[in-house]
Length: 101
Figure 1 (cartoon, rainbow, N blue to C red):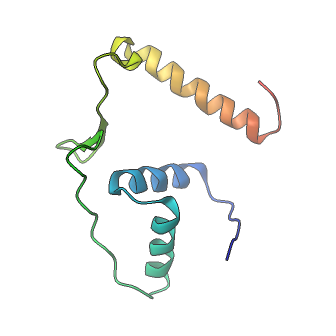
Figure 2 (cartoon, one colour; figure 1 turned 90 degrees about the vertical axis):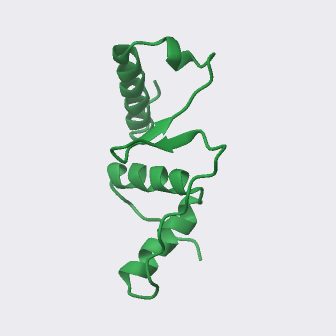
């Protein structure tokens, strides 16, 4: 059954990140979370990342995305990367508000 939920952006971002880190779809992850919340299934431990995954977890538990030597981000400063993120978030907000950028 299809349904629409209005969830906070930060929650959806965290779910998408976890799904990506676990190599699962967002739908499967959300389904498991709902089942766990309703007491219908035991929690599943996170699966190991495949060896060829572009993501690795650092010693603090944060995801690190590996890029190739020619990846644009390798040649950007932290300030440029933060500005890129802010621009993307701004565009998403404007799109949700129905304002073209």
